[in-house]
Length: 161
Length: 120
Image (tube, one colour):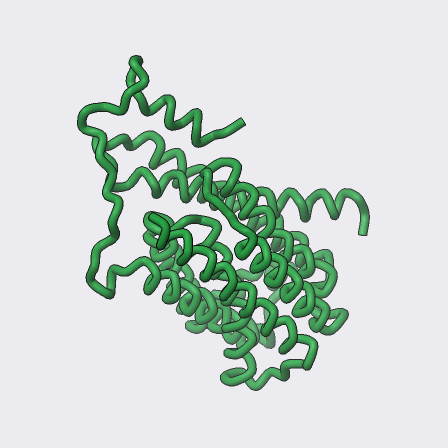
C-alpha cells in the first residue's frame, strides 16, 4: 500500500493528467542563509543547545522546595530562565525543521540529526564538565561515520539528476 | 521489562516515525500550484499530534525505566525512518544509506550502554 501513490492519484484530474497549472518549485533559494543544508546543520546545533539549556534549567530547579508530585510533572523547572530559553530554542528548531523538510528528503534529514547526540555529548563535556567514557567516544565515532556515509549516498544521488 | 513496556516503546517509536512522515508530506505541498490547504494542514496537524503522543509516551517510559534500558531502543528509529520514507514517500536508499544507518544504530547502542545504570 503506497500512501504517496494514492495521494498523487487523487491530485490528478479524472483523465489522469496533472492539472494545467500544476507546477512545483523544484529548486531552493540560492542565497546561503536560505540554503536547506545550512538550515539542517543549524537545526542540529539548535536541538543540542536546547537540550543543554533544559538540562541546566532542570538541575538549577531540582533543589527548590516543592511537593514531590509537582516536581514529578516537571512544571517546577519552568521557574528557571534557562528552561524558558531551552523551550524557546526548541520551538525555533521546530520551525527550522519544517523548512528543512520542505527541501530535503526525510531519510537524509533525519539521519543527519543523529549528530545531535554527538553535539550534546561534546557540549556536556566542554560546557557542563561531564565525563565521557571510552565506550561513549566509540559510539560517537560510529554515529559520525554513519552520517558521513548517508551524506555521501545522497550527494551521489543528486549528481545523477 | 514486560511485554506491555516493550509494546509501549515500539508504539512511541512508530508514533515518531509516522509523525515525521506526515510533517514531510505536509511540507512537500508548499510551493505547489494550485494551492491546496487540505494536505498541508492534515500533514502538519497530524504530524504535530503524533509527535506530541510520542513525547508523552517517552516521558512516561522515562519515569518508569532506567535511561540505560530505554535508550538502546532509540537506535531503532533511523531504521524505521528510512523504511517508512521508502514505503510512503518513495525516497530511495542505496547501500551507503543502509551502511550509514547500521553505523548510527550501533553507535547509538554503544552510547546507550555507556549511560551509568540507575540514572534517569
